[in-house]
Length: 532
Image (cartoon, rainbow, N blue to C red; front, side, top):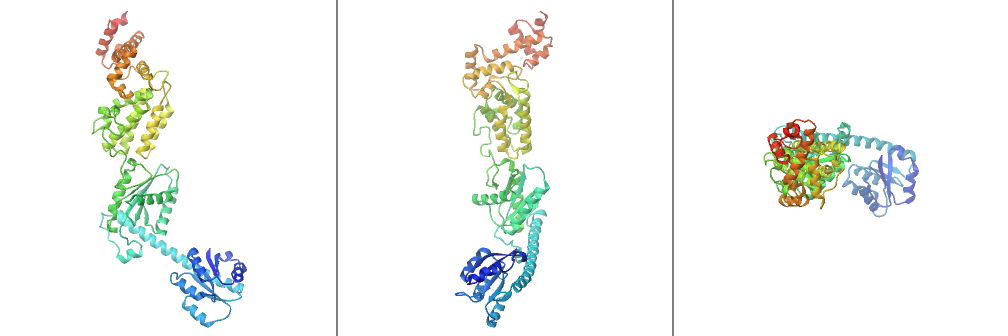
Protein backbone atom coordinates (compact mmCIF):
# COMPACT_ATOMS: atom_id res chain seq x y z
CA UNK A 1 0.00 0.00 0.00
CA UNK A 2 1.11 3.55 -0.77
CA UNK A 3 0.20 6.35 1.65
CA UNK A 4 -1.82 9.36 0.50
CA UNK A 5 -2.32 12.79 2.12
CA UNK A 6 -5.19 14.98 0.82
CA UNK A 7 -4.89 18.76 1.31
CA UNK A 8 -7.86 21.05 0.55
CA UNK A 9 -9.45 23.92 2.43
CA UNK A 10 -12.95 22.63 1.66
CA UNK A 11 -14.12 19.83 4.03
CA UNK A 12 -16.59 18.49 1.49
CA UNK A 13 -13.79 17.99 -1.05
CA UNK A 14 -11.56 16.26 1.48
CA UNK A 15 -14.27 13.87 2.63
CA UNK A 16 -15.66 13.43 -0.88
CA UNK A 17 -12.30 12.22 -2.18
CA UNK A 18 -12.13 9.67 0.66
CA UNK A 19 -15.30 7.97 -0.57
CA UNK A 20 -15.10 8.63 -4.30
CA UNK A 21 -13.20 5.45 -5.15
CA UNK A 22 -11.97 2.24 -3.53
CA UNK A 23 -8.48 3.42 -2.68
CA UNK A 24 -7.25 0.10 -1.27
CA UNK A 25 -8.31 -1.77 -4.39
CA UNK A 26 -5.92 0.50 -6.33
CA UNK A 27 -3.10 -0.03 -3.82
CA UNK A 28 -3.42 3.17 -1.75
CA UNK A 29 -4.32 4.14 1.81
CA UNK A 30 -5.39 7.64 2.89
CA UNK A 31 -3.35 8.27 6.04
CA UNK A 32 -4.71 11.77 6.77
CA UNK A 33 -6.16 14.99 5.41
CA UNK A 34 -5.08 18.63 5.87
CA UNK A 35 -7.07 21.88 5.68
CA UNK A 36 -4.17 24.19 4.71
CA UNK A 37 -0.51 24.28 3.77
CA UNK A 38 0.85 24.62 7.31
CA UNK A 39 -1.25 21.71 8.53
CA UNK A 40 -0.11 19.69 5.52
CA UNK A 41 3.59 20.30 6.23
CA UNK A 42 3.22 19.04 9.78
CA UNK A 43 1.38 15.93 8.65
CA UNK A 44 3.83 15.26 5.82
CA UNK A 45 6.62 15.23 8.42
CA UNK A 46 4.63 12.77 10.53
CA UNK A 47 3.35 10.38 7.86
CA UNK A 48 5.93 10.61 5.04
CA UNK A 49 3.28 10.00 2.33
CA UNK A 50 4.05 8.59 -1.10
CA UNK A 51 1.41 10.74 -2.84
CA UNK A 52 0.08 14.26 -2.17
CA UNK A 53 -3.24 15.44 -3.57
CA UNK A 54 -3.18 19.23 -3.17
CA UNK A 55 -5.67 21.99 -3.93
CA UNK A 56 -3.85 24.58 -6.02
CA UNK A 57 -5.60 27.60 -4.42
CA UNK A 58 -5.88 27.76 -0.62
CA UNK A 59 -5.89 30.65 1.86
CA UNK A 60 -2.46 31.53 3.16
CA UNK A 61 -0.01 29.06 1.62
CA UNK A 62 -1.14 28.03 -1.85
CA UNK A 63 -0.88 24.52 -3.16
CA UNK A 64 2.12 25.38 -5.33
CA UNK A 65 3.88 27.06 -2.36
CA UNK A 66 3.25 23.92 -0.36
CA UNK A 67 4.73 21.73 -3.10
CA UNK A 68 7.69 24.09 -3.46
CA UNK A 69 8.38 23.78 0.29
CA UNK A 70 8.09 19.98 0.15
CA UNK A 71 10.43 19.71 -2.85
CA UNK A 72 13.24 21.31 -0.84
CA UNK A 73 13.53 18.14 1.23
CA UNK A 74 11.75 15.45 -0.77
CA UNK A 75 12.10 15.08 -4.52
CA UNK A 76 10.52 11.62 -4.64
CA UNK A 77 6.98 12.22 -3.32
CA UNK A 78 4.34 12.15 -6.06
CA UNK A 79 1.93 15.11 -6.42
CA UNK A 80 -1.51 15.52 -8.01
CA UNK A 81 -2.86 19.08 -8.23
CA UNK A 82 -6.57 19.91 -7.80
CA UNK A 83 -8.03 23.07 -9.38
CA UNK A 84 -11.51 24.50 -9.85
CA UNK A 85 -10.74 25.80 -13.34
CA UNK A 86 -8.12 25.60 -16.08
CA UNK A 87 -5.29 27.92 -15.14
CA UNK A 88 -2.40 27.62 -17.57
CA UNK A 89 -0.11 29.96 -15.60
CA UNK A 90 -0.45 27.70 -12.58
CA UNK A 91 -0.03 24.65 -14.76
CA UNK A 92 3.20 26.05 -16.19
CA UNK A 93 4.59 26.66 -12.69
CA UNK A 94 3.48 23.18 -11.65
CA UNK A 95 5.58 21.60 -14.41
CA UNK A 96 8.68 23.28 -12.92
CA UNK A 97 7.88 21.74 -9.56
CA UNK A 98 7.76 18.22 -10.96
CA UNK A 99 3.99 17.79 -10.56
CA UNK A 100 2.73 14.38 -11.64
CA UNK A 101 -0.84 15.24 -12.65
CA UNK A 102 -3.54 17.88 -12.84
CA UNK A 103 -7.21 17.21 -11.90
CA UNK A 104 -10.14 19.58 -12.43
CA UNK A 105 -12.88 19.95 -9.87
CA UNK A 106 -15.32 18.32 -9.56
CA UNK A 107 -13.02 15.34 -9.73
CA UNK A 108 -14.09 12.63 -12.14
CA UNK A 109 -13.94 9.15 -10.63
CA UNK A 110 -12.53 7.48 -13.73
CA UNK A 111 -9.97 10.21 -14.32
CA UNK A 112 -8.73 9.97 -10.72
CA UNK A 113 -8.52 6.19 -10.95
CA UNK A 114 -6.58 6.46 -14.23
CA UNK A 115 -4.07 8.81 -12.64
CA UNK A 116 -3.67 6.56 -9.63
CA UNK A 117 -3.08 3.45 -11.74
CA UNK A 118 -0.42 5.30 -13.74
CA UNK A 119 1.30 6.63 -10.63
CA UNK A 120 1.21 3.23 -8.95
CA UNK A 121 3.18 1.77 -11.87
CA UNK A 122 5.81 4.50 -11.42
CA UNK A 123 5.86 4.02 -7.63
CA UNK A 124 6.28 0.24 -8.05
CA UNK A 125 9.22 0.72 -10.42
CA UNK A 126 10.82 3.23 -8.06
CA UNK A 127 10.39 0.88 -5.10
CA UNK A 128 11.97 -2.00 -7.02
CA UNK A 129 14.92 0.20 -8.03
CA UNK A 130 15.42 1.27 -4.43
CA UNK A 131 15.22 -2.30 -3.20
CA UNK A 132 17.74 -3.47 -5.79
CA UNK A 133 19.99 -0.52 -5.11
CA UNK A 134 19.72 -1.07 -1.35
CA UNK A 135 20.40 -4.78 -1.77
CA UNK A 136 23.45 -4.06 -3.91
CA UNK A 137 24.67 -1.49 -1.39
CA UNK A 138 24.14 -3.89 1.52
CA UNK A 139 25.81 -6.73 -0.39
CA UNK A 140 28.80 -4.55 -1.28
CA UNK A 141 29.15 -3.43 2.35
CA UNK A 142 29.00 -7.01 3.58
CA UNK A 143 31.40 -8.21 0.88
CA UNK A 144 33.92 -5.52 1.81
CA UNK A 145 33.72 -6.35 5.53
CA UNK A 146 34.16 -10.06 4.78
CA UNK A 147 37.24 -9.25 2.72
CA UNK A 148 38.73 -7.12 5.49
CA UNK A 149 38.16 -9.83 8.13
CA UNK A 150 38.76 -13.07 6.28
CA UNK A 151 41.97 -12.56 4.34
CA UNK A 152 45.43 -11.42 5.34
CA UNK A 153 46.68 -9.43 8.26
CA UNK A 154 45.40 -6.03 9.28
CA UNK A 155 46.22 -3.37 6.72
CA UNK A 156 46.93 -5.79 3.83
CA UNK A 157 43.52 -5.42 2.16
CA UNK A 158 43.20 -2.55 -0.29
CA UNK A 159 40.48 -0.09 0.70
CA UNK A 160 38.12 1.55 -1.77
CA UNK A 161 38.65 5.25 -2.46
CA UNK A 162 37.12 7.67 0.06
CA UNK A 163 34.33 8.53 -2.39
CA UNK A 164 33.43 4.84 -2.70
CA UNK A 165 33.42 4.45 1.09
CA UNK A 166 31.16 7.49 1.26
CA UNK A 167 28.78 5.91 -1.25
CA UNK A 168 28.73 2.71 0.83
CA UNK A 169 28.01 4.68 3.99
CA UNK A 170 31.30 3.50 5.53
CA UNK A 171 33.30 6.69 5.86
CA UNK A 172 33.38 6.96 9.64
CA UNK A 173 35.63 8.52 12.26
CA UNK A 174 36.30 5.14 13.88
CA UNK A 175 35.44 1.48 13.44
CA UNK A 176 34.97 -1.31 15.97
CA UNK A 177 33.89 -4.94 15.76
CA UNK A 178 31.36 -6.68 17.98
CA UNK A 179 31.04 -10.47 17.72
CA UNK A 180 27.97 -12.40 18.88
CA UNK A 181 27.45 -16.12 19.57
CA UNK A 182 24.27 -17.87 20.66
CA UNK A 183 24.70 -20.47 23.38
CA UNK A 184 22.40 -22.88 25.17
CA UNK A 185 20.28 -23.57 22.07
CA UNK A 186 19.83 -26.85 20.27
CA UNK A 187 21.50 -26.64 16.83
CA UNK A 188 18.85 -25.33 14.46
CA UNK A 189 20.00 -23.85 11.12
CA UNK A 190 16.57 -22.36 10.37
CA UNK A 191 16.38 -20.47 13.67
CA UNK A 192 19.94 -19.22 13.32
CA UNK A 193 19.23 -18.09 9.75
CA UNK A 194 16.18 -16.15 10.93
CA UNK A 195 18.22 -14.44 13.66
CA UNK A 196 21.03 -13.70 11.21
CA UNK A 197 18.59 -12.13 8.75
CA UNK A 198 17.21 -9.88 11.48
CA UNK A 199 20.72 -8.60 12.14
CA UNK A 200 21.44 -8.12 8.43
CA UNK A 201 18.28 -6.03 7.95
CA UNK A 202 18.64 -4.02 11.15
CA UNK A 203 22.27 -3.11 10.59
CA UNK A 204 21.70 -2.01 7.02
CA UNK A 205 18.21 -0.52 6.96
CA UNK A 206 18.81 1.54 10.10
CA UNK A 207 22.37 2.33 9.06
CA UNK A 208 23.73 1.24 12.42
CA UNK A 209 26.65 -0.49 10.78
CA UNK A 210 27.22 -3.73 8.89
CA UNK A 211 26.40 -7.32 9.90
CA UNK A 212 28.00 -10.48 8.51
CA UNK A 213 28.46 -14.06 9.71
CA UNK A 214 31.91 -15.50 10.41
CA UNK A 215 32.60 -18.98 11.84
CA UNK A 216 29.15 -19.46 13.46
CA UNK A 217 29.28 -15.94 14.92
CA UNK A 218 27.40 -12.82 13.89
CA UNK A 219 29.95 -10.04 13.40
CA UNK A 220 28.96 -6.37 13.55
CA UNK A 221 30.95 -3.42 12.22
CA UNK A 222 30.03 -0.43 14.39
CA UNK A 223 30.65 3.27 13.66
CA UNK A 224 31.49 4.04 17.29
CA UNK A 225 33.62 3.10 20.26
CA UNK A 226 31.52 0.92 22.64
CA UNK A 227 33.93 1.47 25.54
CA UNK A 228 31.66 3.55 27.75
CA UNK A 229 29.18 1.79 30.01
CA UNK A 230 26.24 3.51 28.32
CA UNK A 231 27.47 2.49 24.87
CA UNK A 232 28.01 -1.12 26.00
CA UNK A 233 24.48 -1.26 27.42
CA UNK A 234 23.01 0.21 24.25
CA UNK A 235 24.81 -2.18 21.90
CA UNK A 236 23.98 -5.21 24.06
CA UNK A 237 20.32 -4.16 24.27
CA UNK A 238 20.20 -3.94 20.45
CA UNK A 239 21.76 -7.40 20.16
CA UNK A 240 19.42 -8.97 22.72
CA UNK A 241 16.41 -7.40 21.03
CA UNK A 242 17.39 -8.86 17.65
CA UNK A 243 18.14 -12.33 19.03
CA UNK A 244 14.74 -12.51 20.75
CA UNK A 245 15.15 -16.18 21.63
CA UNK A 246 14.21 -16.99 25.24
CA UNK A 247 16.25 -20.22 25.26
CA UNK A 248 19.41 -18.61 23.87
CA UNK A 249 22.21 -17.26 26.05
CA UNK A 250 24.03 -14.45 24.32
CA UNK A 251 27.81 -14.10 24.33
CA UNK A 252 28.85 -10.75 22.89
CA UNK A 253 32.27 -9.05 22.84
CA UNK A 254 33.69 -5.94 21.19
CA UNK A 255 37.22 -5.11 20.15
CA UNK A 256 38.92 -1.75 20.57
CA UNK A 257 38.14 0.88 17.93
CA UNK A 258 40.51 1.59 15.04
CA UNK A 259 40.82 4.75 12.96
CA UNK A 260 40.81 3.05 9.55
CA UNK A 261 38.73 0.30 8.02
CA UNK A 262 42.03 -1.20 6.87
CA UNK A 263 42.84 -2.02 10.50
CA UNK A 264 39.46 -3.44 11.45
CA UNK A 265 40.85 -6.99 11.55
CA UNK A 266 42.73 -5.99 14.69
CA UNK A 267 39.46 -5.07 16.40
CA UNK A 268 37.94 -8.34 15.17
CA UNK A 269 40.82 -10.42 16.57
CA UNK A 270 40.37 -8.78 19.98
CA UNK A 271 36.61 -9.34 19.95
CA UNK A 272 37.03 -12.98 18.90
CA UNK A 273 39.57 -13.61 21.67
CA UNK A 274 37.22 -12.12 24.27
CA UNK A 275 34.31 -14.11 22.89
CA UNK A 276 36.31 -17.35 23.24
CA UNK A 277 36.59 -16.61 26.97
CA UNK A 278 32.96 -15.60 27.50
CA UNK A 279 32.67 -18.52 29.97
CA UNK A 280 34.73 -16.51 32.46
CA UNK A 281 32.51 -13.40 32.39
CA UNK A 282 29.22 -12.70 34.16
CA UNK A 283 27.04 -12.62 31.03
CA UNK A 284 24.23 -10.23 30.15
CA UNK A 285 26.69 -7.58 28.97
CA UNK A 286 28.95 -6.63 26.07
CA UNK A 287 32.47 -7.82 26.96
CA UNK A 288 35.31 -5.41 26.19
CA UNK A 289 38.97 -5.21 27.20
CA UNK A 290 37.93 -3.24 30.29
CA UNK A 291 35.40 -5.83 31.49
CA UNK A 292 36.68 -7.73 34.54
CA UNK A 293 36.33 -11.54 34.38
CA UNK A 294 34.99 -13.45 37.37
CA UNK A 295 37.47 -13.87 40.28
CA UNK A 296 40.06 -11.76 38.44
CA UNK A 297 41.06 -9.85 41.58
CA UNK A 298 40.89 -12.67 44.11
CA UNK A 299 42.38 -15.60 42.17
CA UNK A 300 44.86 -16.60 44.86
CA UNK A 301 44.46 -19.17 47.60
CA UNK A 302 42.70 -16.70 49.91
CA UNK A 303 39.76 -15.24 48.04
CA UNK A 304 36.74 -13.50 49.38
CA UNK A 305 35.60 -16.40 51.56
CA UNK A 306 39.05 -17.02 52.98
CA UNK A 307 39.72 -19.35 55.87
CA UNK A 308 40.90 -22.87 56.28
CA UNK A 309 38.77 -24.35 53.54
CA UNK A 310 40.57 -22.23 50.91
CA UNK A 311 44.16 -22.88 51.86
CA UNK A 312 47.12 -25.14 51.40
CA UNK A 313 47.66 -28.26 49.40
CA UNK A 314 44.00 -29.17 49.19
CA UNK A 315 43.89 -27.44 45.82
CA UNK A 316 47.20 -28.75 44.52
CA UNK A 317 50.09 -26.54 43.47
CA UNK A 318 49.76 -23.16 41.80
CA UNK A 319 50.88 -24.79 38.55
CA UNK A 320 48.44 -27.69 38.89
CA UNK A 321 45.47 -26.83 41.13
CA UNK A 322 43.74 -30.14 40.33
CA UNK A 323 46.65 -32.20 41.69
CA UNK A 324 45.10 -32.20 45.18
CA UNK A 325 41.83 -33.68 43.93
CA UNK A 326 41.81 -36.76 46.24
CA UNK A 327 42.17 -34.63 49.39
CA UNK A 328 39.61 -32.17 48.06
CA UNK A 329 37.19 -35.02 47.30
CA UNK A 330 37.57 -36.17 50.90
CA UNK A 331 36.64 -32.73 52.19
CA UNK A 332 33.74 -32.41 49.81
CA UNK A 333 32.47 -35.85 50.78
CA UNK A 334 32.62 -34.98 54.48
CA UNK A 335 30.97 -31.57 53.91
CA UNK A 336 28.10 -33.15 51.96
CA UNK A 337 27.79 -36.03 54.40
CA UNK A 338 27.43 -33.77 57.43
CA UNK A 339 25.19 -31.33 55.54
CA UNK A 340 27.53 -28.33 55.69
CA UNK A 341 26.39 -26.26 52.68
CA UNK A 342 28.72 -23.37 53.55
CA UNK A 343 31.75 -25.69 53.47
CA UNK A 344 30.63 -27.08 50.11
CA UNK A 345 30.36 -23.54 48.71
CA UNK A 346 33.86 -22.66 49.96
CA UNK A 347 35.35 -25.81 48.45
CA UNK A 348 33.75 -25.24 45.07
CA UNK A 349 34.63 -21.55 44.94
CA UNK A 350 38.18 -22.17 46.16
CA UNK A 351 38.92 -24.77 43.49
CA UNK A 352 37.37 -22.56 40.81
CA UNK A 353 39.51 -19.59 41.80
CA UNK A 354 42.70 -21.61 41.65
CA UNK A 355 41.82 -23.16 38.29
CA UNK A 356 41.01 -19.75 36.81
CA UNK A 357 44.21 -18.23 38.25
CA UNK A 358 46.22 -21.06 36.68
CA UNK A 359 44.75 -20.20 33.27
CA UNK A 360 42.79 -23.40 32.85
CA UNK A 361 40.43 -23.61 29.88
CA UNK A 362 36.66 -23.90 30.13
CA UNK A 363 36.87 -27.60 29.27
CA UNK A 364 39.62 -28.27 31.82
CA UNK A 365 37.62 -26.54 34.58
CA UNK A 366 34.50 -28.52 33.79
CA UNK A 367 36.50 -31.77 33.74
CA UNK A 368 38.09 -30.96 37.12
CA UNK A 369 34.69 -30.33 38.69
CA UNK A 370 33.21 -33.47 37.12
CA UNK A 371 36.11 -35.54 38.50
CA UNK A 372 35.68 -33.96 41.93
CA UNK A 373 31.94 -34.64 42.05
CA UNK A 374 32.39 -38.20 40.81
CA UNK A 375 35.03 -38.91 43.46
CA UNK A 376 32.92 -37.47 46.28
CA UNK A 377 29.82 -39.30 45.01
CA UNK A 378 31.75 -42.55 44.97
CA UNK A 379 32.45 -42.13 48.67
CA UNK A 380 28.83 -41.19 49.39
CA UNK A 381 27.59 -44.32 47.64
CA UNK A 382 29.25 -46.43 50.37
CA UNK A 383 27.53 -44.55 53.22
CA UNK A 384 25.43 -46.11 55.93
CA UNK A 385 21.75 -46.91 55.81
CA UNK A 386 20.72 -43.45 57.02
CA UNK A 387 22.58 -41.56 54.29
CA UNK A 388 21.72 -42.37 50.67
CA UNK A 389 23.24 -41.00 47.46
CA UNK A 390 20.58 -39.32 45.32
CA UNK A 391 21.56 -40.86 41.97
CA UNK A 392 19.01 -38.88 39.95
CA UNK A 393 20.34 -35.61 41.34
CA UNK A 394 23.92 -36.77 40.74
CA UNK A 395 23.15 -37.58 37.10
CA UNK A 396 21.52 -34.17 36.58
CA UNK A 397 24.47 -32.46 38.27
CA UNK A 398 27.05 -34.17 36.04
CA UNK A 399 25.13 -33.25 32.89
CA UNK A 400 24.72 -29.66 34.05
CA UNK A 401 28.47 -29.25 34.57
CA UNK A 402 29.07 -29.57 30.83
CA UNK A 403 25.90 -27.70 29.84
CA UNK A 404 26.72 -24.42 31.57
CA UNK A 405 28.16 -21.67 29.37
CA UNK A 406 29.10 -19.30 32.24
CA UNK A 407 31.45 -20.13 35.10
CA UNK A 408 29.30 -18.15 37.55
CA UNK A 409 26.26 -20.27 36.70
CA UNK A 410 28.31 -23.46 37.06
CA UNK A 411 29.58 -22.42 40.49
CA UNK A 412 26.11 -21.43 41.70
CA UNK A 413 24.59 -24.66 40.44
CA UNK A 414 27.22 -26.81 42.17
CA UNK A 415 26.95 -24.97 45.49
CA UNK A 416 23.17 -25.41 45.43
CA UNK A 417 23.10 -29.02 44.20
CA UNK A 418 26.01 -30.76 45.95
CA UNK A 419 24.72 -30.38 49.53
CA UNK A 420 21.58 -32.24 48.40
CA UNK A 421 23.38 -35.27 46.89
CA UNK A 422 22.98 -37.23 50.12
CA UNK A 423 19.55 -37.76 51.62
CA UNK A 424 18.74 -38.59 55.23
CA UNK A 425 20.75 -37.83 58.37
CA UNK A 426 20.71 -34.73 60.54
CA UNK A 427 21.87 -31.28 59.61
CA UNK A 428 25.19 -29.91 60.76
CA UNK A 429 24.46 -27.25 63.36
CA UNK A 430 25.31 -26.23 66.92
CA UNK A 431 25.72 -29.01 69.50
CA UNK A 432 24.93 -31.68 66.92
CA UNK A 433 28.32 -31.32 65.24
CA UNK A 434 30.21 -33.73 67.52
CA UNK A 435 27.39 -36.25 67.20
CA UNK A 436 27.64 -35.88 63.44
CA UNK A 437 31.40 -36.53 63.68
CA UNK A 438 30.74 -39.67 65.70
CA UNK A 439 28.13 -40.79 63.21
CA UNK A 440 30.54 -40.08 60.34
CA UNK A 441 33.26 -42.20 61.97
CA UNK A 442 30.90 -45.16 62.42
CA UNK A 443 29.74 -44.95 58.80
CA UNK A 444 32.96 -43.91 57.06
CA UNK A 445 35.72 -45.49 59.14
CA UNK A 446 37.20 -46.85 55.89
CA UNK A 447 37.82 -43.32 54.56
CA UNK A 448 40.91 -41.18 55.14
CA UNK A 449 39.48 -39.51 58.25
CA UNK A 450 41.65 -36.86 59.85
CA UNK A 451 40.80 -34.41 62.59
CA UNK A 452 42.38 -31.59 60.59
CA UNK A 453 40.17 -32.33 57.59
CA UNK A 454 37.01 -32.46 59.66
CA UNK A 455 38.02 -29.25 61.43
CA UNK A 456 38.07 -27.54 58.03
CA UNK A 457 34.70 -29.01 57.15
CA UNK A 458 33.18 -27.76 60.41
CA UNK A 459 35.16 -24.50 60.24
CA UNK A 460 36.87 -25.09 63.60
CA UNK A 461 40.41 -24.90 64.82
CA UNK A 462 41.58 -28.55 64.88
CA UNK A 463 42.92 -28.36 68.46
CA UNK A 464 39.65 -26.87 69.71
CA UNK A 465 37.59 -29.45 67.85
CA UNK A 466 39.75 -32.21 69.34
CA UNK A 467 38.99 -30.92 72.86
CA UNK A 468 35.26 -30.79 72.12
CA UNK A 469 35.41 -34.36 70.80
CA UNK A 470 37.26 -35.68 73.87
CA UNK A 471 34.88 -33.84 76.16
CA UNK A 472 31.91 -35.55 74.48
CA UNK A 473 33.36 -39.05 74.03
CA UNK A 474 36.08 -39.33 76.67
CA UNK A 475 38.51 -40.37 73.92
CA UNK A 476 40.94 -38.59 71.68
CA UNK A 477 39.74 -38.48 68.04
CA UNK A 478 42.39 -40.89 66.70
CA UNK A 479 41.87 -43.32 69.56
CA UNK A 480 38.10 -43.34 69.03
CA UNK A 481 38.58 -43.86 65.28
CA UNK A 482 41.06 -46.71 65.83
CA UNK A 483 38.70 -48.47 68.25
CA UNK A 484 35.80 -48.25 65.76
CA UNK A 485 38.02 -49.60 62.98
CA UNK A 486 39.38 -52.45 65.07
CA UNK A 487 35.87 -53.36 66.23
CA UNK A 488 34.78 -53.60 62.60
CA UNK A 489 37.97 -55.55 61.76
CA UNK A 490 37.07 -58.19 64.35
CA UNK A 491 33.66 -58.62 62.69
CA UNK A 492 35.25 -59.06 59.28
CA UNK A 493 37.84 -61.53 60.57
CA UNK A 494 35.01 -63.53 62.11
CA UNK A 495 33.45 -63.65 58.63
CA UNK A 496 36.59 -65.29 57.23
CA UNK A 497 38.11 -62.41 55.24
CA UNK A 498 41.86 -62.37 54.69
CA UNK A 499 43.88 -60.05 56.88
CA UNK A 500 44.99 -57.73 54.04
CA UNK A 501 41.36 -57.47 52.89
CA UNK A 502 40.23 -56.56 56.39
CA UNK A 503 42.95 -53.91 56.73
CA UNK A 504 41.85 -52.24 53.48
CA UNK A 505 38.15 -52.37 54.35
CA UNK A 506 38.58 -50.66 57.71
CA UNK A 507 40.78 -47.83 56.43
CA UNK A 508 44.37 -49.03 56.95
CA UNK A 509 46.41 -48.88 53.74
CA UNK A 510 49.44 -50.53 55.36
CA UNK A 511 48.94 -54.12 56.63
CA UNK A 512 51.85 -53.91 59.09
CA UNK A 513 50.35 -50.74 60.58
CA UNK A 514 47.03 -52.57 60.90
CA UNK A 515 48.79 -55.42 62.72
CA UNK A 516 50.23 -52.96 65.24
CA UNK A 517 46.93 -51.25 65.89
CA UNK A 518 45.06 -54.55 66.22
CA UNK A 519 47.54 -55.94 68.73
CA UNK A 520 47.42 -52.65 70.69
CA UNK A 521 43.65 -52.73 71.20
CA UNK A 522 42.89 -56.50 71.13
CA UNK A 523 46.07 -57.81 72.74
CA UNK A 524 46.77 -60.37 70.01
CA UNK A 525 47.60 -60.30 66.32
CA UNK A 526 44.83 -60.58 63.71
CA UNK A 527 45.92 -64.12 62.79
CA UNK A 528 45.93 -65.19 66.44
CA UNK A 529 42.48 -63.65 66.94
CA UNK A 530 41.10 -65.62 64.00
CA UNK A 531 42.44 -68.91 65.39
CA UNK A 532 40.57 -68.53 68.67
